[in-house]
Image 1 (cartoon, rainbow over the protein chains, first blue to last red):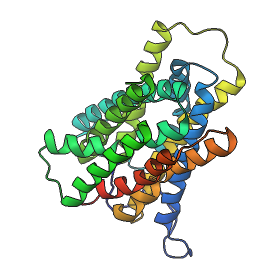
Image 2 (cartoon, rainbow over the protein chains, first blue to last red; image 1 turned 90 degrees about the vertical axis):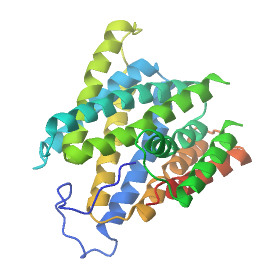
Image 3 (cartoon, rainbow over the protein chains, first blue to last red; image 1 turned 90 degrees about the horizontal axis):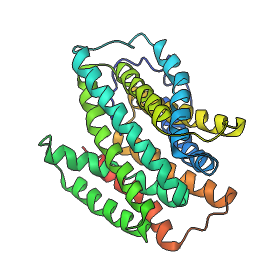
Length: 157
Length: 138
């Protein structure tokens, strides 16, 4: 999960502070709902077709949010576009391979187990950060690693 | 190890590494630019699959809608997560809420598809957002 700073908001043009539910909370809840629905409907998809067809159609579906992002003023913003783009493309390649594995897993097991298990991917993010990027880890993150491993074990039973 | 478990762990590893590469990408470019690069990488993969993997018969309208909806839902979820943080969300609060999504999936799968969820799986489902909250701690 990527964490963004509260810098110039260019995703949302709506003023903050006027609504009873804060804007950030609405977006946060919407994120959970969109991803939750995605996990569910992915199961419906792979029950009807192969993971490969699923991945191709998923890619077609990306055209809609891409069109939305292309309207943003910051669509090509960045201090080092070449490096940033290379890393973003790498992210997409890894994400696509992850998707294929996810669809293939969903084909063989229930969504109520596969989706929670794969949602623990921040475990790998933190560990790669420590091992490869030499980031430091706080005790709470170690506790998170332990808890994630317990969750993976329980879901694999 | 069961196939489904190996594949799930594979997805977990790939997606986990994207957490690092995405963060590194946004050190250099905006989240929007990063998203465009991310999405662009899916296109050659899709063409490669179409070229190498035999696809049986025509795709039904139902499959077409479900498949395309997957890309829309997943990517808009990523965009709303960016928007949440740009609107001032603290990761310590927002991440565990976002990571309630497996609970939503599981409840839908249980209610609509009739998937049986064992007690130990419920425990794992409930632990997942707590683990995500701790892992996201700065």
